[in-house]
Length: 473
Image (cartoon, rainbow, N blue to C red; front, top):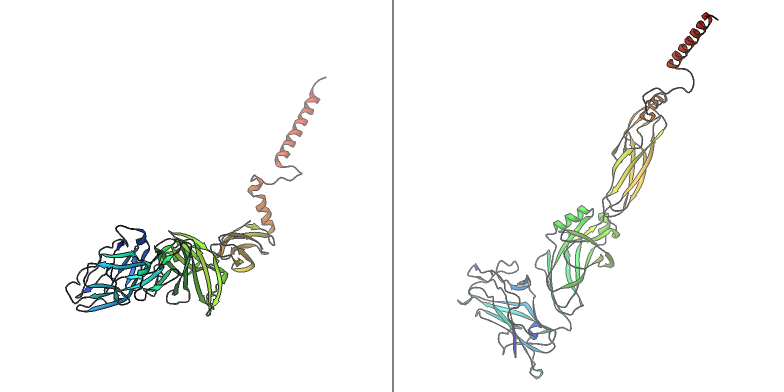
């Protein structure tokens, strides 16, 4: 019995100087499915093929930076454009059919376009598929968008392998570098729970410097096929958000799952041995931030050793998005300062207090100077945890009367007034704390009111005595 599945390969051909591009792409497989067909997988293995929204697309036009287009009246051969893998438990015959007379698919130089001309694959085998495009006739016109992959179970006694079908005991892994700033990874036939490690070939994450690189991406998948796209460009937004948080962004990469499901992954990076010292970064302050939907989370970073003069470290992530490698920094500053009292006597101390904040992502310390009229009179070293605030209090005093400007770490704390003792006593007597503007009474002695009262009393007594003498008996 023959089992078949259809998929779309959009082969954009440059014919007679004109470009024909696909306006859309069909699903990777469409139409009836069956168990055997489910065991056949396709994946790009060249710069001519790519996965776009989970669909295999072959672009041979000049619009592809890795291609030069197709010349008219010529026959062009492309080797190993994509691969077909069979994940079944028995041998299978696989071939491809289509309606174009200008395109021929082959494996190891032999066509595989009929049941008689097929490639036989054992369980977990894959084969490189190439194609020839003939533009010498009138049939090489338009767009090739309907190709069918056929798979038929093979009788054990009828098994003969064709060409150089590649046999693997496990999965098939392809790694490509479409540009200097991108990588494309594909694994076929992965078992559920297995971990596949992709070699990123030291993808530079810090632009032209090339010191900070992504070396490997290890993924644990749910099984089957998994395709990843890694891009070191277009990460400005994530880098800015990390900087706003208080860390220094050193490099970034965006990782996207194009097909399949990833359960967890590990990103492995490396830097030259002198990287940390040159940037004033402690290895312990190296961090990896995951930016997902505008939200930042900090991943644990593990130093994994040195090799080839480079320090290696890794970060495990529960999912993919944009990752920013950063240096956690302390950002300590004096937020505000104030005087406990603004008027004192000569030689009397006043307390100046300041709040010192750390808006960075690492703990830090700062020497805070207290100045009076611009001259440093005291200094304190303040330790502040990341995102925390510390309080520091310092006494200041002046011997000479006058007004003095006090500041902490350059932040104005107010003006300290030093008054002579008599002035200070008078100010104290007139202070609102006494509850009245009246002069403070002496504890003994007469005031004017008491004196007048006494005089009136004496006058009344004298008058009474005079009247008593004149009264007849």
